[in-house]
Length: 387
Image (cartoon, rainbow, N blue to C red; front, side, top):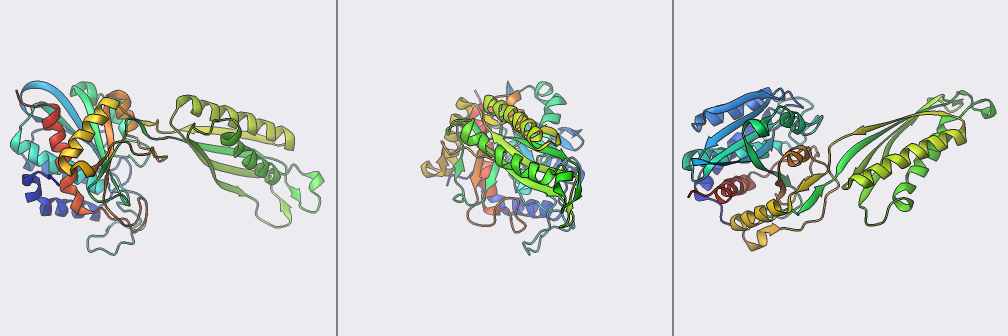
């Protein structure tokens, strides 16, 4: 594996950064201590052009290379999850009910490692913009950073990001041209009936039966309204109603998620949801309120940038270290907003066996940090060579 020697030389320092960040996780937009840690490291590296407080706690730092030229953006997310940690490590979270269960501590570390190397060598033309983003886990920090004008203000022409991948072979990169992760939308359905005694259901308008009918009908959308190759998911995940065995309640609540890659597929699903809910409501004599909460768009890689990123990954990890045509993932990622603003690519980096993402026993594998940092550094040097 062709990890850059200089980066391999400070691998232990990177592990210390990551474990320090792991002890002090922060949620959502409130990544102030994490951002402070990032800025302190950047200043130690001799980077002076730093903007803080973007989208509350986001950071953008610029490293200037040799001469004039384009600007490439590299993004890392910083936020954690509201999960009680169960790793038992000596550097486990010191914040009750909060942990880095998705590897964002590692993502931040990999970008810091690349920053340290690039600030020392500056073996590239133009500039690199380091984007440290809060709130990827929700409500989404990428779009607010884009809306704050970072792409225009720093002249960013292309943008890239990495995500660790437990269960994938350690040190192996995975990406694909076009859609790589799905959009995510949330279904909320309130069913309003008329409660009463369970022994006299004829005097009620039962929201329980109506909710059951809606859930079953919703599951026909994929099988009967979309083609088998349309690649979508509609999952009902919550049904809440009732409080006693002898009482018909007056309300029910249904909740679920919708995932897709294509805007037309997304539209058809929501249209059918509206029609099914209205039709079932009329059938059972209840009233309904359907709320469609639109989340992240699909994460869509530019085909050319994905191919270029795969070439760079091959240099770092070898011929067997890149899967350039991985299967699409039904998970979602708010980096989609940055890829809508500028062409670029999103990649996964395998970290070997272990607990999955968002699991209380998940822990980032520090051995892959130099691999990810080397990828970021070589990406810049290859995209913007000197001379």
